[in-house]
Length: 182
Image (cartoon, rainbow, N blue to C red; front, side, top):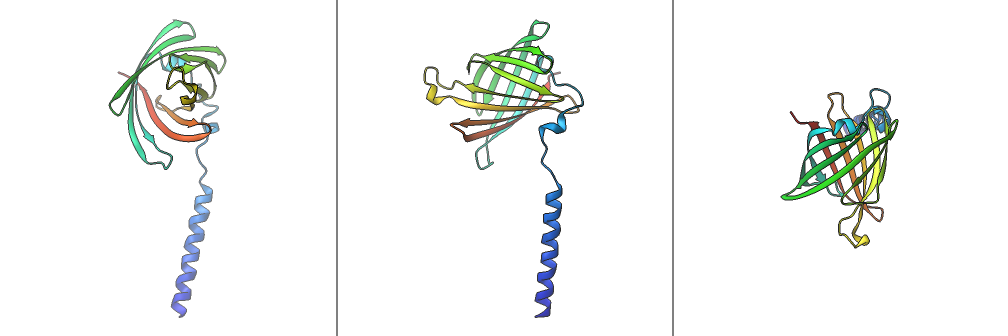
């Protein structure tokens, strides 16, 4: 009987240590990327950029592979046209972006399958914007919202985390790593 009580006490100590350590680890937040360097999507997406990533369903299970090939062409000192070819599990789609810097850390963009435009705000090595993807032209009920965070890594690569929602319900999440092509 004493052995069982001792085992229970040891388990409680281990459980307490695990919970204590778990409480010490904070999630990575956008402010961790602020202050060192400045992410400029116009500069980053000028030229040839490729990406690869994974789609995950609401349960966090991988449901698809995403790759892209992007070519950005300058339209002026702070503006580019970027043609992005997306490959998602065998299907291909082309999105043409018009991206412009409108001020320090401020960007606007439009795309051929975007409803209206978006405004992005960059702070240090992070940028955020939210936009509406027109999935079925002429049927606004089928549109989805794309909430995107861009994080520039120390090696120059950019991680983009996209949460796709419809009427506030999370449908899918996409994590992609973008790099300048050699």
